[in-house]
Length: 321
Image (cartoon, rainbow, N blue to C red; front, side, top):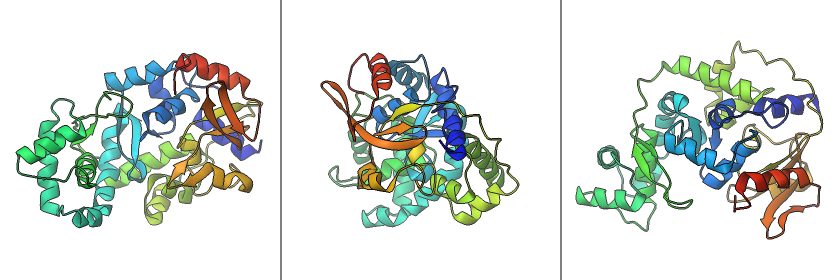
């Protein structure tokens, strides 16, 4: 394992000491990609010890971690203490970035703002997206439920700090609840805080890495990085094998995956359509992809993951992850 990969895996909690609670694991990497709750659970598993999958669901239900649109304008799981200032910093930028698509869908700025207020009012209790479409229609804002318009209306409301994801009714039926992000930080202060937190969880890393991970313009990323020092190199934690799930933040945290994913596996890992496949990480490097089977886990190419498979069974109670 190279010195850089040692530092990165230890910083992320993938090697060496691991967190013992959900919030600490999430805060360690600022936020965990969470468009698929099953993948988010797996991201917590590999960064913790002694927990089970229901601990993630319990943390979401209790509100100690929340899911909302943050880095890169994608759905993330963040510690409740971080969600407000991160959304206030990044959300409006990505809401503006999607303006052209909203206009294509017939949602102009005035309608987006009006619809977001309707959505927020409806979310005093958990509401599914179809229920929000009904609430909008009852208030005179009719959206085609078969189009992308409801999705863009809901994400606009979230990115502008009015709602967040609520408790899931199932792994495939999310709900949304009202959200108060609090007073925003000064932008420069918020950028500096985000850069420092990123570096603590991803170092060694560059301003270019930070810009890619956060979805920020390179100039702002460089300004936020100015004066920051790379943390000291971590000692080698010894041989480490981890089963990462879809969209793991270790593979989404840098400008490139050079050194992490060998060229012969790159197309298998990024399978197209933005899909990042589950991977086997050995000493900080991807050596295979994997999938659950009736017999346990199948890797391609074949590698020994017996210890991780045992832990995955313990974590899930042998249920689907």
